[in-house]
Image (cartoon, rainbow, N blue to C red; front, side, top):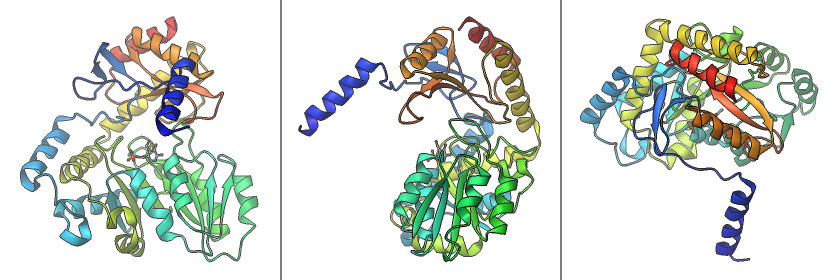
Length: 387
Ligand SMILES: Cc1ncc(COP(=O)(O)O)c(C=O)c1O
């Protein structure tokens, strides 16, 4: 079948199954409420705007100042045309924030994960990857050319340990995991992973895109939550969620690792840098997070209130400190119908189905923000009571 007919058939099948994704358009900024075209003002529970900084006046002012100072960008990749001093500044900030020697930014965490694995993996290395790792980790691992890629059972330290007993003669062994799993809201047991990796002489890589700005009493992420800040070999993360919400990603690790990435990683060698507007808005977001604990405390309070409220209403919520609360539905079309009903009730919650989650495990995913007020939380729980 030719491409045109094949595509039409696939798209029509999605409509028939009720699983077609529709892109909605917002007529204003991201906040606790958003103005959705054809819907109107609704409470937003589907953004990763965990700290509510996406439209914070100081973040916006930093972006405006950056645009005036640097313009749009260098119109070139960094190693050819140089880099702005604001890139160096945010990279130093990210390294200090992550308790590592150095850091490098990319235009997204997807690009960071895709940069990392092929750059660090030698042909006699072995990668051990959690079975529910994010798609960008999976694709990064696919691009690498190790001796073997081994998938261990989700958050299963015993299975990982069993697998680490194999391939002990490899040159380097890399264990890679999400800090917070984006579809489950579950947290990797980093204290245990640090201990196992030390015992088996393996290096630990954590993608903390959903942990940074959320977990830990200072919002430094899953490592802080687990009491192992400074003990993770390599951390990757995004600037497109809690830390300003625009776009951008980073890798934090040793000075030599960052130098190697500058020399060899393909998504920086052959692609432009993070726009300076984003470097400066994300930098401001980190400063706001570091200024005091108001934002992180508010987020933790909101998470507890919403989790407890949903549990009281009879929704099964896993016990977890993260801002991601999945409500399991099973059937994808049913999950989509439920999210549409919530939208009618003024609450925007997205349904996820295959291929984002396994078939038959469709769910609604509630995401909590520090920007939600008590009045928003009451409205949310009233809508779920009706659902
Ligand atoms: C765990 C994880 N890693 C990486 C990414 C990609 O982040 P970015 O949007 O910066 O490419 C995401 C985004 O959904 C994610 O959830």
